[in-house]
Length: 181
Image 1 (cartoon, rainbow, N blue to C red):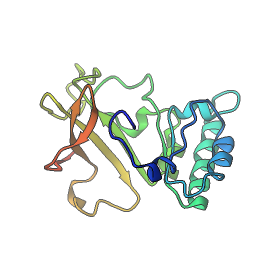
Image 2: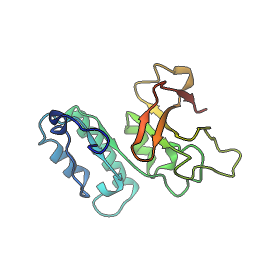
Image 3: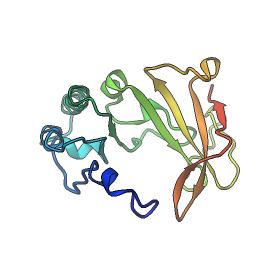
Image 4: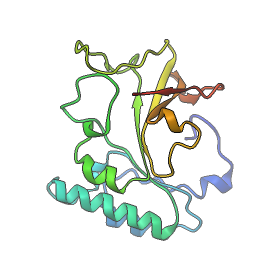
């Protein structure tokens, strides 16, 4: 975060960064000790499983993080990679391992789509593609528990953002929204 934008000290104090693999229970226990915590982010959710990764173990992670974030009244963001069945096109929820529980328990389900950086192209003419210009990427929103209030007839959809290899993702000033289906 500091590399992109210098945050004021009072915001930095609300962010807990732990660069270690920990179970969801340990993450929630540590998060509950931080006064005025603003957000929980777990990169690579598979590392939150104690022992063998299975559907029931991943369901437990999703359930515990969902329940813990609701009890603490803070949002939680779990990041995951697409699975081996993904072969191009716009990444969809079923392209993430153990998605059933994640989809059921999440308030929002987003997928990053940047065909210019990662090979999202496919030879399959039935795969959905989103035409983006160089320097553009998209955040596909497949689910929003609060609904798609601004674009109800165009949901699910994607927000078009600028991509800069040195500074990462940045919302487009125009706030472009594109219908996926």
